[in-house]
Image 1: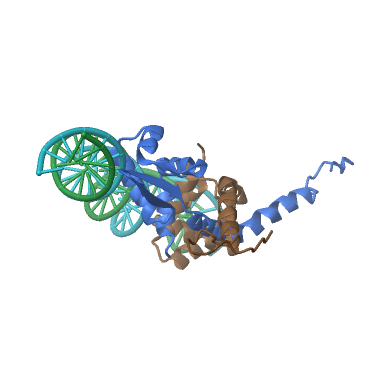
Image 2: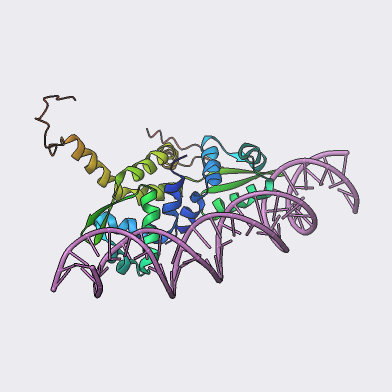
Length: 113
Length: 113
DNA sequence: CTTCAATATTCCTCCCGAGTTATATGCGCG
DNA sequence: CGCGCATATAACTCGGGAGGAATATTGAAG
């Protein structure tokens, strides 16, 4: 189960914030530090976790390291989610299929679509 | 940020296994205990976490408690994922758009669109 | 080669989450 | 009404993850 690291990485709200931040555009560590309000070492550690989960990639630009999002692992998350999508489609479908189990409602003719 | 509990719940591999188990069909606690190989109290605690994250619902059947998956939170996860979907679609698109950044390739005339 | 800026790493502390054992609750049955 | 089964909760221990301070590393510039 390789994506255990992926779930662990995304379990932390600060790391999710970083990922959301990197969705807009790649950023240097300094920018991320300032945006997240964390200390620099803590930020670097979080970035390391994201890196090892494969969620981000680093490009070295002079002294700066620019982090960018890697879409692969998030696509894997989407794939994990796939089997459940059928489930909630079905439940929405059942909702739309009218709740005729109401014992005292005499079938209101509201055909709202 | 209500879905912090959701991420926390799904961060644990045992709980993900339980969720996957409940995707097939609702199960009693005893079944889940046996399937996951955990002790009964530990299983109950995990189920409590899933319950408080809204991921599962309980139906009481005599002494047994039958747990079933609730599609709502997973749909929320899907919604969270939505902004990233564009990202990896774009990256796949870029792959298909041919990697013409190869320095020695003299601009192949493949105008594929 | 020295120095400075940007980032990573180490060490330490603390809290939270997971597991186990023991116990409580609730329900059906005789 | 007391017993046994299924599940939940409490009390406790333990390991890991998160945060901060201090330090190491790397690259650019002079």
